[in-house]
Length: 462
Image 1 (tube, rainbow, N blue to C red):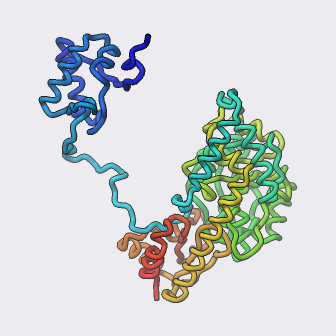
Image 2: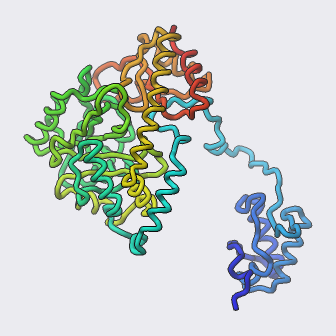
Image 3: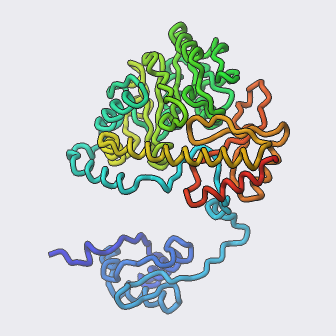
C-alpha cells in the first residue's frame, strides 16, 4: 500500500554537498533560501518525504530542518509544516531594479489594448468546461499544426458571417498572436522569392522589423485623407495594410483604393496582407467588410483575439490563399504552437454565441467612453481636434503645430502614459508628421476612466 506522504508531498530540488550528509543538506538548504530560490513562505516537504526523495535517513532531514529553524532561516509550526521564514532581503549594491518594480503610470491611454477588466471570465470558464467535457481524448494530443479543427471550423463560420471573409477551414492557420503570424508569413514569402514589402507610412515598428528580419525590404506608401495611396506599389512583392481602420490615423481605405490594391495584386501576382486588428468595433457607420472578400486568392486575412478578448490569450489566425497554408504550416515547423485547451474554448465561445454577446456589450461600453472623450476634449481643450472616431479603440487628437513633444512630456510628468503620432511614422516616410496624440481609450478600467480624461485634458493645449 502506498504511504500517504509519498503522493501528498511536494517536490524540492536540493543537492547536498560537502562532508557529511547532515551538514551538506543544511548548507544546500541555507544557500537556497539565502539566494532567493526558496522565497519566504515556501512550504518545504515533510522530513519523511524529502528523506525518501534523497535516499537518506529521515533523522538526517529532521536534524537539518532543526538547525535551520534555530538559525532563523526556517519556521516550524504544528499543523502548518516547515516553511521558509519571512525576512528582509537587502539587494547587493549596484543591483538594478527589476523592470516590474518601476513605477506604473497613474493612467494608461496608450493604444493597443482592451479593457482587461472586462474579460468575460465567467462565460469563458463555462465555455472551457463545455469544450473540455465534449473533447475526445485525441484532441489533447499534439494535433494539427494548422490549429485545432474545431477552432478553424468555428472561425470560418464567424468570419464569413461577421466580417465578409471567404474562409475555408482548410485554409486557416492558427498562430500565437498577430506578430507570430506576420513572422511566419515573412518566412514563407521570402522562401517564395519575395524581396520587398510595401507598408503604410504610419503603423507599428515591430511589424516593420518582423518583415525586415525575414529578409523583406520595407518601403512606406504615401498617406492622405483617403487613406494609404497604393499608386506607388511598383517593385513590391507584397503589401501590409489596415484597410478597415488604418492604424493609427483611424480612417478606412477609400473604396477606389481598395479596388486598386486588389487590381495591383491580380496584375502582378503580389499578395496583400490585411491586418483586421479591431474589425469588431464600429460605432457610427456600417462595418467595413474585409478586403479579403474581394479576392481571397490574392489577399491574406489576419485576425486576432487581442482586442476583442485579451492579448494574453495569444490567439490569432490567418485565412490564406490556396497553397500558402502548407508553406506557412511548414514555417511553423510542423507543430501547433498554441495551447489546445484555449483553442477549444475559443471554438466553443464562438459557436455558442458568447463571443457575439461579449463583443456587442463591449462595443457599447467603448462607444460611451469614446463619446465622453470627444465631449471632454471639445469642451475643455479647444486647442485639440478629435479625429478617427468612427471605429476601434483609439482616436487621434490633432494638436497645434510644434506642441506634440511638449504635451507628451507634460503627460509623463502627470503620470499619464500616452503616445505621440511621431513614434508611429515609418523612418523612410517623406511627409512631415502632423502633431497629434494617439489616445487609446480601451485600456483603463471603468472606475478610472473619468480620472484618465481629467488627466488628459489637463495637458492638452487650450
